[in-house]
Image (cartoon, rainbow, N blue to C red):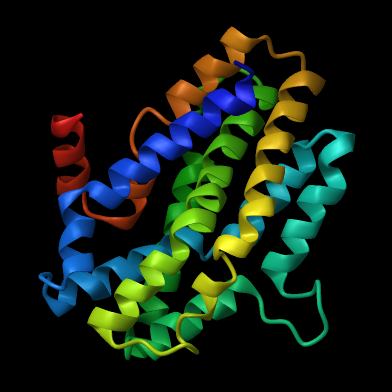
Length: 234
């Protein structure tokens, strides 16, 4: 097994755990109260509002063979890959407003900024920028992989049980199953990064294991209780 296959296996397993966890199952079944849907939407906003900044960092550490690929993703996130395009942060604001939560935008934007500050200011787990960059790729690309396979399912749930229309759900359509090619390209970028910076398999595996030691999707999209329950079940 190569490192890309190893990390993809983690992504698949964590996506399955996310979709099977009680918090998501309640949303999908329609049993959750309205505030649970609103919190879920807000957590998606907070998690992905700074995606252009994270991709810009990945571009700075990507090996030459992957730079065009990462740059393309960054330009898409910024909405300048096509004429008249909207940035993904703008589409997330459209999601919030479409859910009738426009009054929360300022607070959610500040929460996203605070989350970014915490990431930048917290002590590093690794001893070199090469490890930090690989770890960042492992987490950022995990969401690209998961959303490519599940965004349509999530959007269907929000349309059915929260009453969101297609305009509000455009962010999900941008990450739908048609984006599976991007998810596979992300795995290629991970493999090329490991090779370029001379990671052996064991070292790259250890960085991935530490970075993805908790289910990142449950951790980012739900409250700590859902993550604790997932730990208990695993």
